[in-house]
Image (cartoon, rainbow, N blue to C red; front, side, top):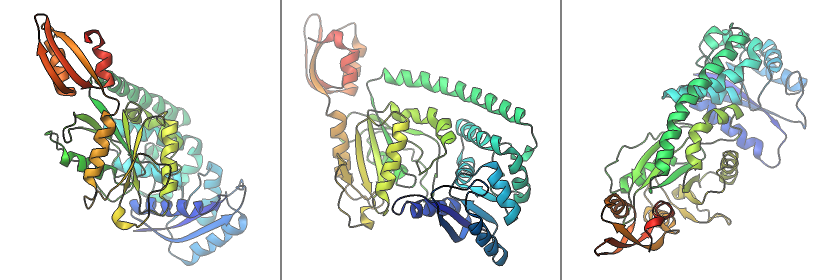
Length: 413
């Protein structure tokens, strides 16, 4: 196992730096890297040559000379000159938070789309650092960064890398076009959609599996659950039918984290657009984490970047078996659950189904006998209150969603 030291600059209020450094250690652990020491410095403005002060650089260098250290992990994003200057002194690879996250994404990506998204973000990170990264990757010999695109041929010209970015972005657009066509088809359907969002490792995939287990449908394909950051990058959708509610589509999305690289968010925006189209968001929160409020803020910030912060949200405070905290004010509607121990799941399901039906209205339709497909839709996607017949067609009184009201307004009486 590789050993690394962490380096961070404290320019934050409160204990934010500790939160970020703890996350950096967790990111390293995800890549099977052991963190052995932490170095922080209180400065209001980063220095140009090293990001940290010369005295701190010398302190870290002395530590490296006297202890087994394979990597130096910086919480801040570094420029090419800073990487070069630091590596010349430390004589071991220097990796920043952005590259660490990109490496995790490189290992987690399974589908063609996810691989392309990570490759584009990785190339955009590599491009301005091309000169200094050459020495870094040669030293690593298969370590951090070696799995990303371009490293094996790092001597490629800037023009070649730019060409690769254009080519891969074109491939991504083709995939996005297909998904947008499928999404437009779904939007015409009366079935509602629910998206699960939240901080990485908060329990999103466990929530999906819990709802799948409670569903009356046969779509019982569970999703991957691991106690790791970014265990999955693929957006997964399943059809769910709970209690006496009508079926809906439930989508699990990738987790968020503080300071998620901008290029990575841009690359994954096409995937995360599934969130924007949802009728309801399930925001899963690790209630046992002492920094859960900060994690909520991070998730809300990403949702704002995606223009999805206006969608109604049910806050799911998970892992209540590990904490005695009371629910904070300002998060409504909300439920407390332990997904692992199946505690308060009935309350979660009741709240979810009530929210999905709260905007339904009772409408009476007169459907001509020639439009039997409309009756099928009403039977499957609404709550039928009364059905009668006359010479001209079928009269149905039902509780229906806004989508059905929009699609079949011409049949209202």
